[in-house]
Image (cartoon, rainbow, N blue to C red; front, side):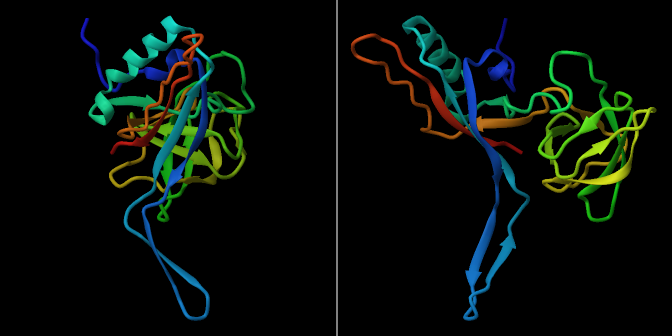
Amino acid sequence: MAITYPLDLLANWPGWSTEFALLYRQEQSRQANGRTLVKDFGSPLWQASYTTRSLRPNELDEWRARLASLENGLQTFRGYALSRCRPQAHPGNGALATGNLLVIRADRKSIQVNQLTPNMRLTVGDMIQMGDRDLHQVMETRTAVSTGWIDTDFEVRPHIWPGVTTNTPVSVVKPSCVMTVVPGSISSTADLATGRGAVSFQAIEAR
């Protein structure tokens, strides 16, 4: 069967996401009074670093091959923070409903969501996915009412992307974005004596 992209590379990743943060696309200039002016050249993109535990030789070769299928950044995979596969208040593997983007305020960062699991709680730092590729981090803690509606505005970052409208699905389980490997960032050197080694790479969101 042919490999399909974006690849679900991290489904069985034997390690961790050591970094997952926004990369701001900005120009900065400092004034004589010491203030730094910042100008955006586009919405920020998610960037990540992934590292495995020490792998046996066969495992090491397997993960070298899996990463090789991404062709040094030509192909895409589903990227997410391995620490934030579910809301903090709802660990485990119980079912959590996919919500619906009910309200987008004019600032494009304040939203309301409904159709969530009743009484589900989103905590500062949780991740949500809008549609099939837009990943956002929750900036304010909110709890859905018994109908599954978060009826008070809360902010997310980055701002809602242009073109996203209300009634877009909102996922809270394994929320992700489409990413590519940063060319040249893959490291998989094996130990001479044991043949064991760790695999690490960096990635950036692909819009």
